[in-house]
Image (cartoon, rainbow over all chains, first blue to last red; front, side):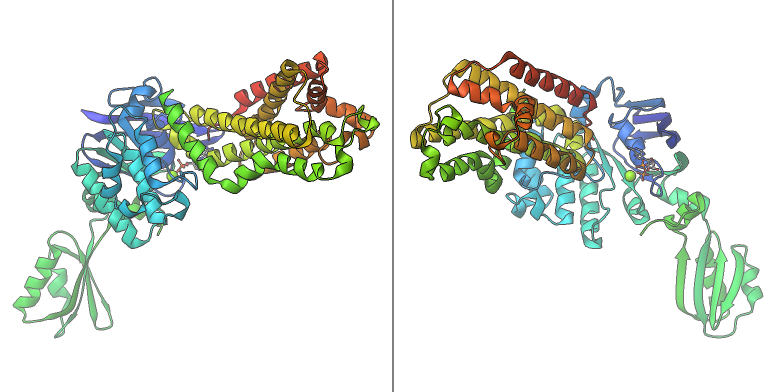
Length: 302
Length: 244
Ligand SMILES: Nc1ncnc2c1ncn2[C@@H]1O[C@H](COP(=O)(O)OP(=O)(O)O)[C@@H](O)[C@H]1O
Ligand SMILES: [Mg+2]
């Protein structure tokens, strides 16, 4: 049974339709990505799930409960890290976690959580003195301090440097491994590809695709591309005769073969049979980036 | 209640950590009092002030300083900042309600005002022989209602201002007006009579404080106006306040 079910969600701000028609279901224990360009309605969607906004239409069910009617129960069981939410400048790391822990019936041990999130030596540091990555980790810690069954994390690595981003990803995987269902809002393809079991791509308030990252890539952009410099002249027909190959192009001394399926194997076999060595061989597969462009017509942010 | 207590404890700690602001808000009126009190002629009874000293006459206006600073300046600024930075919103995702944080800020504002007033009254009494308020009940009532009126105005500012900057833009003129009509910038006997009379009815109602301090019961109309302002501004703030 899904832990989160959203059906035909609709939300307007005045005349602006932020969420037009979003339906999705999140399964227990998965990392579910909500992907989409800026302004697509990702934050609005998850804030409806978190009970922070009232939908104009459609249904939301979280752990079988209604986010508005059963708000008190769900606040105990769902941890939320909001996009761009800060803390008072002078509040210290340990104080923040201890305070937030005190709101919950069955909280995690703040000291343990601080260590786990790598903030051990920042325990007594004021919020204002933390780096961007440390603030973000504290924010994740606050979302987890209630021992939630579901954690909703909105844009958790935006504004972090690549190293801090990778560290955060490792952390999220740990959290998932401890049994927490995670809803991750992001506009970074790499993040979705690395972390998410399934991804809903949202564009202009609608779900335009919902699949595993690999599934999205293969259905939307199945093309692969091989580049190499042959050690001896290659007749194009040698390659175009292969069922896997759809096109052969040449740029200078380079041959570029596009196709599908076991393209690499087919091409290297035929070359080997003709004693041609493929120098500088590179396989370019479509990424979630390509799928994203295909689905939304936008370049992903980066 | 549990969450409120913990939030209050933490907010109090943050308040104490900001020592310069704390000293300024609690101590400034007393510092001004001491500076004025060092001038011998201001310690002599003077017929201009019905035979009181200038220091006695001016003490209620000094009460206005902290009331205005805390009520219409600090309180809205803190609340607007908390809202702008998403502190209130983050709290709304937890089992604690952001109203607990608002309540904690009100308690701290009251504590600051009370500490400042007590310090002023005690130092005025001990150092400069200013008698303790002679109509204690009336004084307490005038003080409570004046404080309530100013805090409600502060909450109203926090409610209508979307950002910290907007809160400041509203709070600063309100602060200046409060101080001016409260006779802080110019002692009230130097103000044109009509301005001084207006000041009787602008929060915190300095005439009622002066009357009660010197022994006359405060006028019902003065107190009533403060109560009305407190209720109207408070209700407006409650209606308009946004957590995000
Ligand atoms: N509180 C709000 N008031 C008015 N418009 C809003 C509000 N929040 C978001 N929007 C608008 O709704 C649309 C969707 O926003 P959002 O859900 O934040 O998108 P995303 O998180 O995908 O970037 C955007 O056009 C945004 O400007
Ligand atoms: Mg967003």
